[in-house]
Length: 50
Image (tube, rainbow, N blue to C red; front, side, top):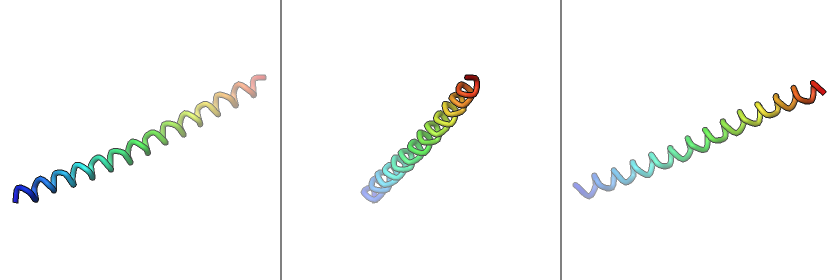
C-alpha cells in the first residue's frame, strides 16, 4: 500500500512538473509577443516622427 502511495506521489509530481513547464512556456511566449508588439509600436512612432 505504501508503495502505491509513493508511486502516486511520483506521478503527481511529474504531472505538476509537466504542467509547470507548459505554463512557463505559455507565459514566456506571452511576454515575448507582448514585448515584440511594444517594440513594433515604439518603432512605428519613431518612424512616423521622422
